[in-house]
Image (cartoon, rainbow, N blue to C red; front, side, top):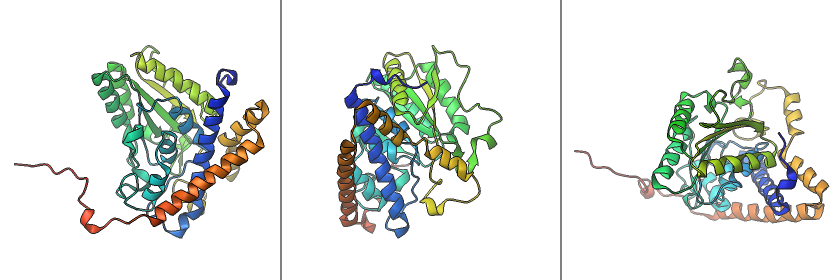
Length: 332
């Protein structure tokens, strides 16, 4: 269901829009420069999915944790990750958030509660569940949110993790970004019915909702409720956000495999752009003006330009540092 826009403060709406616009502009810049081969990593862009990252992370506290996946730039930025460190990581520089060891698929910023992304399909799900267990054991009162796609929803570890979270009433939010494709395989080719959304669990064990993932206000309100529920010790939540991956699985548009999806379908989903949708809504409400949006765009562009300059001027790693940051155990 659409969110009740009147229940959300104007300054919150503006912040949500700014965060989505910033992620979109960062992704567009990466996409436009990717074929120049200065970024030494595969990238998986989230254009069209910004409302999920922003709606979720804006409902969390800095002390809350997230675990992410290969398509995680939006999650990283929405949780407060440093843009300079992100772009430097894509360029393989030592100033990157993972010290040039992770690339696009292994981002981390512990200072804002982003405890890492995983390139393994479904790999972040048990990690996010374990974070929930740690929070509970420490009595920290925080929440763990784990992002994963519809491909990861096919993995058995999801159901094992949710079962454990229900059993222990862990403060975990399972955020399924259903962008309709696992690489080139559509949901319809992998599921006999519309059953990606988890059904059947009693609500006293699992708060479960299927929502419009392109409506950032609906995502925000739903996650606020789920997070509040988790903080009160009631247990986990499963939120399926239905959205769409506008670009290809990896790289830039020019590298997208041909023939696996209908061009008209892509165009129809592009019309549902979450950024433009909120822009139209907020200008209609008088919360934003075109002048406001222009100033936001200029501010974001300046920040992005500075981040790329920072990355290009940052030092590359040297061979002698290869073993740094590794744990060396002692075995008998």
